[in-house]
Image 1 (spheres, rainbow, N blue to C red):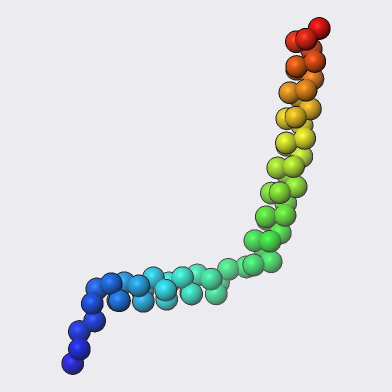
Image 2 (cartoon, one colour; image 1 turned 60 degrees about the vertical axis):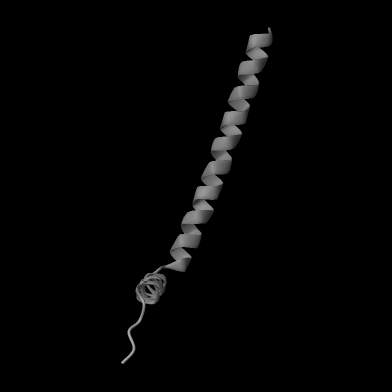
Length: 61
């Protein structure tokens, strides 16, 4: 009977846990969330750049 090393057992457990978690993920939901977050971030960036531009313009007068 051969004894496995601790690193082999640990890596197998981590791999198995990762596979179980990935099997339960809703990839369409994650893609939808990522798309909404990207659009929201772009809108925020647009407002921030506009506010910075207007602030610089107001300070220069």
